[in-house]
Length: 62
Image (tube, rainbow, N blue to C red; front, side, top):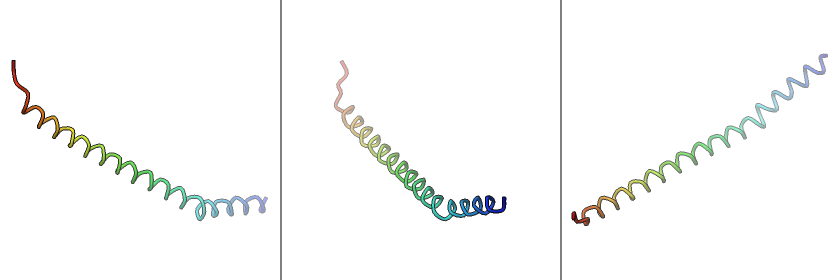
C-alpha cells in the first residue's frame, strides 16, 4: 500500500511541475487572445459607427 501512495504522491508532484504550468500558459494565452479579439471587434465597431455617422450626414429627407 505504501508503494501505491508513493506513486500517487509522485504523480501529483509531476502534475504540479509538468502539466499544470503548461495548462496555465495555455489558459493565459487563450485569455490574451480573447481580449485581443474583443479589442479588435470594438475597434471595428467604432470604425463602422464612424462610417455610419459620416454617411448619415449625406442622406436627404424626402
